[in-house]
Image (cartoon, rainbow, N blue to C red; front, top):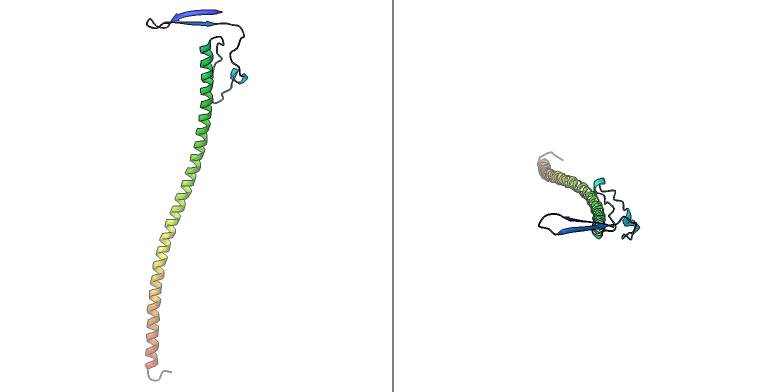
Length: 143
């Protein structure tokens, strides 16, 4: 067993660290022994702890937990980014549909006005034709 005592600063108490080079392990899960975190850069990968130092083991476990949480959050972000892309595509389609609806409404308005004008002209011409027929029938010598 190796023991070391250090004072970090004059106003802090001494810190005593003890560790052993034997193969005893406090890590129970094989998964925790050498977990893989492909999302993390190499320098951010958890480093195996000094197993005889409980603080080292706890820091390692916390680091692994944070790395797993990072992986989970990163996956959630990727899913949300995919959903965002889908929603943006839907929005673009909706905007195109809105523009098409606006164009069709304007075309309908123009055609409705044109139809109204044509109906008025038709009505006027029908009246004129009827007037001409009546006048034509009143003329002497017309049959």
